[in-house]
Length: 146
Length: 408
Image (cartoon, rainbow over all chains, first blue to last red; front, side):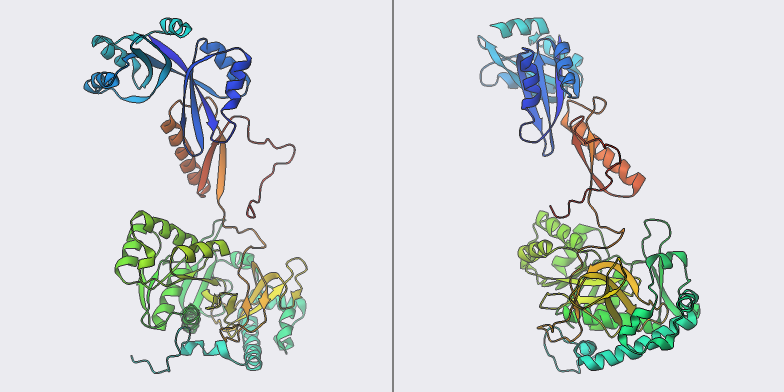
């Protein structure tokens, strides 16, 4: 149920983001979603791609340090309060969210968000027990085709 | 004690009288004192006597001030080599105070004072404060470190001799410094200029507006600082920022000070004879030319310093100063000719997969941890900057050990 996310270290300077993205583009790799967390001096670029192993290889060849992390993709009702309902479940179980971001696509009235948990397995269990749809890799990539 | 002199306003105190001596009289006084101190060092300091004998120079050879060039130099290494008491000219039972420098490499250097030396020190500090426009009635917060460092006690006794109220804060504990600054009606502060910048920032963070306080002067020294720093201090607060100069080997603070004109530092020449030399040829240079400042103590008894090479780069300004003092000024010290630098170090660390994390906090922690361990190992506070892999230039052949970015 977990999805592999690639993380890259970038210095916070003009032009730095283009480098890794160009390397991926050259190999025909499409990015499903990404997030950029920044500080004054540096940033961490987090990417979700279909073939994370190949993408990691491409990025490392281009000279970047890449870390892989398991994250969880969760369906969220795309209406006011949709995310709140989900957070309530996590709060009850005292599950901490390290960070989160969203996919660009949606299906019908559902959006998909990416969560980074300290303990992803406990989070998946809690969410599924409450009837929340945790989206696995295969299903996610199929949706991305739409 | 009542004030028994005419109040001539800011900047005058009876102790300042030698600052206004007619030049011929000052030179005569200097020559007489130079002869005395050379005799004293020759009679009581074996290293000095040995060097004089090697050169075949007797104390009687000093007949005029320019004859000072006949004398051997004293260097910082001489103090280290004779650690701890080797250059003392007085027996221990005449010495009332010892100070020592922080020796970052090897042994510290130790300096000594007789009662007369301590009195001279206080008097030159009174003259320093008078230069800074301070007088009886001022409340002086002394934030120089108290202890072996000459800054704390030197300023302290000078401020008391001036008749001002002195608050012996010593360094550190920034929040309490600001509380005292705000609550005690402080009118002047003594500390390093970089520490004052820190205080300014911290005051802002505490909601204390320095412009609303009676604080009007700062005596800043113990490190080189720039006009840009002065502009910032004077622009963001309502104080006048004075550059003061001194060094433990000579006496401590109180060797020279800026006056209201803030155009060079008046050397208290009746006690410290200044020369400028070419640091390469060691030849004396005329007034106005830049070189290394060399100082001879004219009054010191416990530890006379003959032609001490300060390594500080300056020139002597012979023109009269608008403030009326006749003692010559030196330019502000911007750089040194040797190994001692006040430095800010940035250590760049390439982020490899081993230290990479997807979490910002984890990387920030790594950065802090690196700074701590480096400080523990080399005793220098550094800033660690994380950079991308393979971005630090590898040395080709000889390592580049120093990149000078001071002018950037």
